[in-house]
Image 1 (cartoon, rainbow, N blue to C red):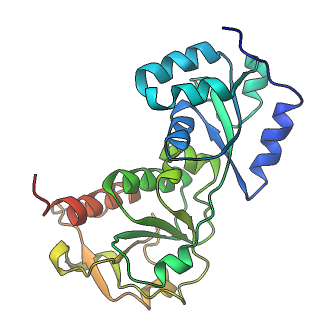
Image 2: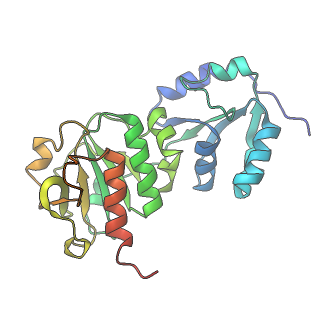
Image 3: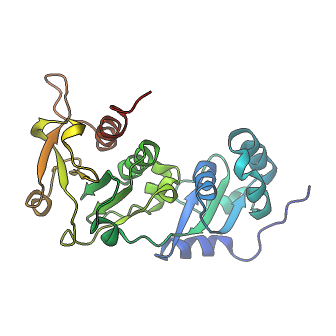
Length: 254
């Protein structure tokens, strides 16, 4: 089939999308795939080779193939390279609308939980990896307290676009938090999921500094992951993964 070419200055539109808080740039097939799968509104989809992208979707994500084929427009390789800081080897990129998320409202009332709270994380790739595992493990939401934007393209790459699979956003204040808050702390008691209340918020400190003083003042419990002697810490995303799978899946029947 013939693939329509993109019209207008696509590079300018992608640059503008990076500065628009209502939009997000998706770099790579997997981010676009997950956005489509979880109901994102895609404003624009481009591909260097749409036929190859359609074949990839047929093999890896047939549920989104037809929608990808309908929306993809062709761009040349040079134009594609100008769309982002890390051009995806799959040759696919898109702009999507960010979903409206009311994290303050979600955390002000009881819920099934658990909710992941990342406290002042520094590395956007780790933020994305934590979101990815939270989506896989069945967390209720991911909240970021601090300056890091969980919808930054680097975080979206790290999450493979799974920001669309659950509520994800920044939490400006802890003042409205009404759920029990348990913080991961090497000095805390060993994590036992049966001791955590339903709907708990699981807080993880930054990669270097741990919990911020603001969050440390409001935690109801401090828990730790069992680790081999001599191992002092885990990567942020690894700690989120281990904690969630202990809490969500360790006591479920097979």
